[in-house]
Length: 180
Image (cartoon, rainbow, N blue to C red; front, side):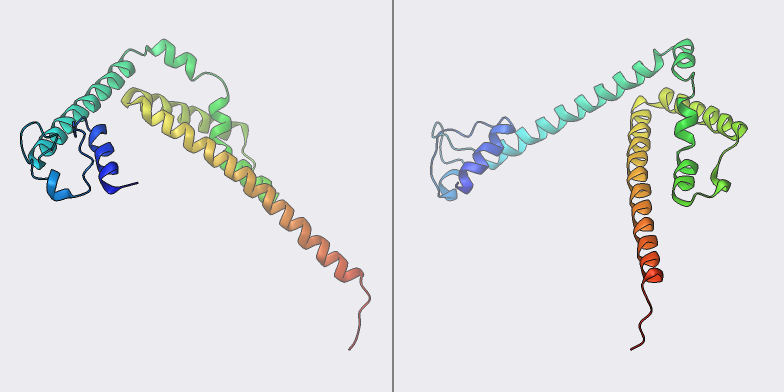
């Protein structure tokens, strides 16, 4: 593929008409040789790119306004219903549960009061983030889910490695001692 072909496709994506010139010589097309010859001047490309940047920033502003208005339209009753239940307690208890799974130490077991407190404060945090910008909640949910998956994998790996080490130690103890 020629560099000119790649440039033509990139400019076409920007909405710049590059004409039908197949020339491999950039000197023939880069300076805007003449009217009607299909050549594109640098100035035309610059103007078109600026217009596209302005258009893109307008689209971003519209998306930001839509997200803000969507957050404003969510009623408190909807939020109360969304944040009822024990799902936030489970999510908030993820770290202690993972540590208990990895260590087996009861110090990482949460009391019912601790679980309720963590769940309630996490629900309040998610509600606040939803009112600020719903994208924050999406980011938080992804991060929590990702952390839960990775933590589960790490716990299983840790258990497997620990079991293998225990098997090796047991095999060494069971083997007769050899003096060399």
